Length: 134
Image 1: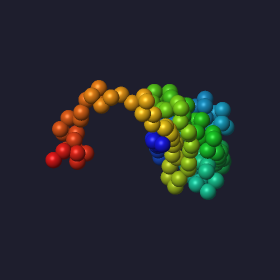
Image 2 (image 1 turned 90 degrees about the horizontal axis):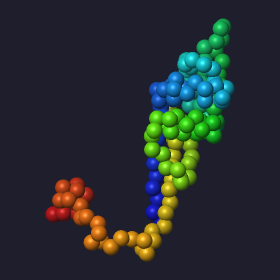
Image 3 (image 1 turned 180 degrees about the vertical axis):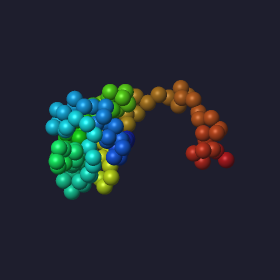
Image 4 (image 1 turned 135 degrees about the horizontal axis):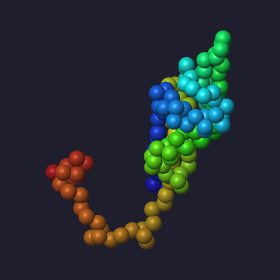
């Protein structure tokens, strides 16, 4: 089995950019318009709490990992960030960031492998960089 992994990290500033660029999507998840005054990462509950200023007091809205994932994937697609379609997707909340993770597993099939003579050999600089040339 060959496994490819990719992770996209969203720290506080990036999450604020997502909210600024996605007011309708944020509203669909119950987020207030405008920028939150605080973003609180909650790894134990795998959620992020956004604290918005209010008239006399602040109010907060928590998004669980499923809602965060939908919001972040939608934003990445609108940014035209290439994301793997056929991948296991997961999201985790860590201290100070949300991580959108992708995992693609494939089984090598020798019947589909091109003969070696059809593939160009790496140039000498690449071989040296990988320690393959002397």
